[in-house]
Image (cartoon, rainbow, N blue to C red; front, side, top):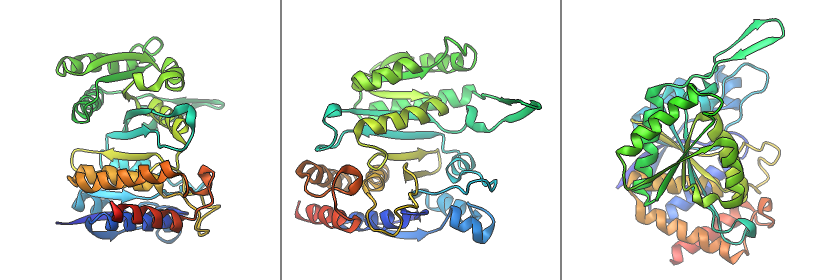
Length: 335
């Protein structure tokens, strides 16, 4: 079967890691026709927007997209492409698996959790105003609809991935109405999923627990801001944003993306680590039903890291993007 998938290479190192990922998918035998569309800072200079309508149309049409890192112009009034995509296409669930790879930071070996973050509201709704000179106000928007569906997604994910627990992370001891609504919805959804153990934790306690014993949290479900912060903390536990995958899931479409920045300082030097986008592509393969190919890539990736001979500079090695990709494709082919 041949799949038509939207590819947004992105800015900076984006095109480099996107090309590497395409090679890896091809080596795994997955047939993909890529519909390439550009977005981000470079496009803004040409078209006056970081997100041309054609990009949204392509994602709606193809239902699945793979996206490299995208920069947001600083001080020019352009909205983040990531935020715009999530809101325009109602990508309500941000899914971030946090899983250790062998041969990296030994203190956190065995870490294996997933953060499911509500993606469309909270403080990221951008409802701000100046009450008077010198006093700014941001409104935290939490709705029952969004709380129910993100909790439902988290429990369904736990069941699908054979997880045992879903932990809701909140600050309802202080924000009794907004975060209290999330708790209320979580408890309601939990009743419909008796095979999964529900747990509740205040966000600051969760941050400490992630460092001390992350795996007891299993699947975390939380609001937009907490999820954003905890996701980066989780990445730090397993080696950094350069290896962690991510996905934005909606009812009608999904986009799989590298969650790190566009790193313009190393763009074009051939030293970028493509692991994050490759692992995001693995998530994409599971999403479209190509589990066998996904598992082949996962197995090869684990083998490369376990051997430790081919690492990019951000992980303490000296391999170029091409050298890392060559080694991974060779391992896939020989499996």
